[in-house]
Length: 150
Ligand SMILES: [Zn+2]
Image (cartoon, rainbow, N blue to C red; front, side):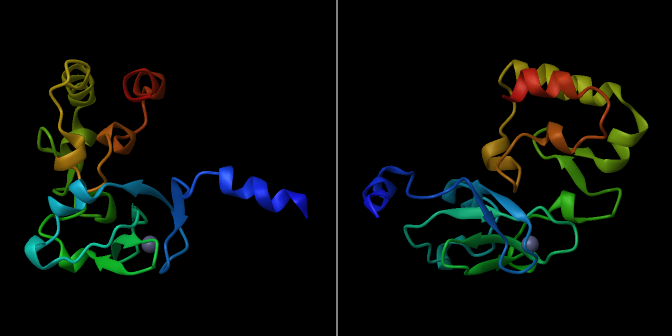
């Protein structure tokens, strides 16, 4: 019973939340990110709440809020590469690397790693996930990803 008082000391929100459509555990995304990808951004009424990005390939939801309001892929002006099986869809939005590019040449990933280390990427605004694209590349050197991104 006395534990109830401790709950107020916990963070007021979690960094992950389950997608109301597919149940995928989704990472938080900033309003800044959504504003760069949503169509007719001037009509988007965002409340002061946290938003999350759903990266599940078969889910139409791109973003959702804590109130479970959703923003669908069709409401974005950016195609979400991680949700697409089209090999011409983008993996890296900062430098325009398609899925086909990444499959074809592993050195492209090294290029992205190098540019990221130099701080030349703009994942928060360019990538609809708001996060570094390196985790979406074909897995070959994960340790390097950890060094760069964490
Ligand atoms: Zn989803």
